[in-house]
Image (cartoon, rainbow, N blue to C red; front, side):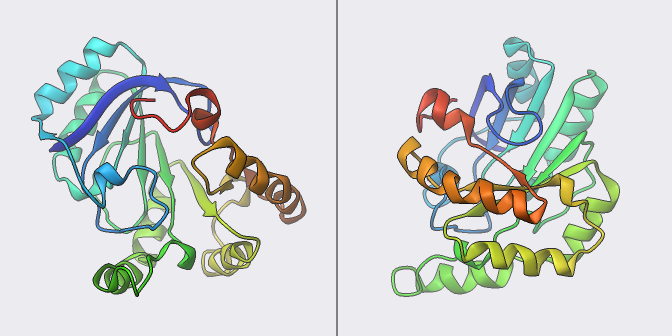
Length: 228
C-alpha cells in the first residue's frame, strides 16, 4: 500500500473534531479536484510502499486509540481490508475518509464521505484529460447508497461559492434517506483568511438549511502544513 505519511495529530474536521488520532494517509487518487489540499497524494503522488504489518507497527508506535485512514483515496487499495480488520481487532476506533466513488468491504466505525460536486472538476483548458475523467468518475450513486446503509457515516461537502449550496440541495434530493444532521458543509480554502471569508456566509446558510457546518480546525491550529 503506497503511503504518503503516518502521523499523530488532532482531527480537524467533522464529528470527531479535536480527537487525538493517528492518520494513515494513502497516496493515490482516482479524482483530481482542482482545490485538493493534499496534491502530494493526487496530482503528484509521493510516498513509499508499506506492508500492512509495517503500517500497524507505526500506528502502535504513535499510541492513539483513534485511527483515520485517509488519502488520496484509501479505497483504491485492497490492503485497506486487512489493515482495517487488524485495527478493529486491536480495539481501535477507525474512521475512513473517502470520496464515495469506490467500495471495499472494510471494517469501520465512522465512514467519512466527501462527495465531489461539479465545483471540484479541474479546468478543461488546463487539464483536458483529467477534466473529463474526473467528471465521469466523481459521482457513483450505488456506492454512496451502500456506504450510507452499512456504516455510521458523515457527509462533508466542500463549498467554494454560494452557488455550490444549490448543488448540495440537488444532491440530497437524490438521496432522501440521508440524515441531514450528518451532512456537513465546509468552506474551501487553505488559509485562515479564505476560510473566514467563506465561513461568514456559509454558517448562515447551514442554519437556514438545517445542515451542519464543518470548520477546518487543523488549518486554524497548524496552518497548511503536512503531518498535521
